[in-house]
Image 1 (cartoon, rainbow, N blue to C red):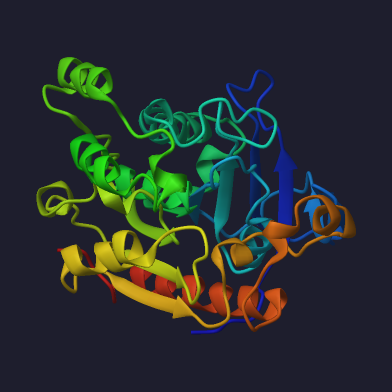
Image 2 (image 1 turned 180 degrees about the horizontal axis):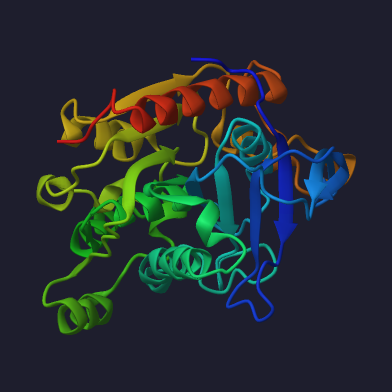
Length: 322
């Protein structure tokens, strides 16, 4: 398995004339790359270039973390595009850096996977893009709340009762997860919509998922994870200062009982999977710049290799679901 770039990274933003939400795409191209900036962070890409001619290519749909944006993992998207993958990243409505009005609330837990499905629908119907997508090799990757989003797309039945019960006891210890924990009327609403207080949004087109420091593990149960049958990779931070490990990554590991691959990234914190910090970000949002013993670019290089290796093994059938 070669890790060398085979292509340049094509890039297009706001792909549709009338976006339901902003969506960026990276893809294998042959045109030269030029300087680009993603939210102030410098990189290179072949903006607006034609697709490489030897497709179709597997595709990864990205889901960013809470209050983030579609460029949160552009560094990984570019890396994968140069190695033969299409990467599509929608910006979630009501849970982004411009509009965090629904962040970490039950409405977002329901809405995020549907937005991912809509993005996939639009791409598979796009006259200039659809023919370049290998429809048998569509994967999903997400960070934090995005990790929970892609696990739901794989078939996780998110149990809001478990979330509510956990926060009834642990609200003072876990403010991040419990600030907007569902109440009785939320549970009743789920019962009316789904017949039980779980949120289930399986997308059969997704054939593998990668969850980076996934959130909302408190809503994971044995029954809720029982129906996932696609390959799964969990990427953990060595020191997750935002999400309590024993009820998130470690909890998923315990429940999945060997059905997923788990990789812990040395020196990484929860935000180490975001782009390197600019002086503006460091001055105004210093918490986003905290790592735990390794340079962020070195952390990114490790993640790139781990993610690419997993996807290549899935693509060739070396890793299969149940």
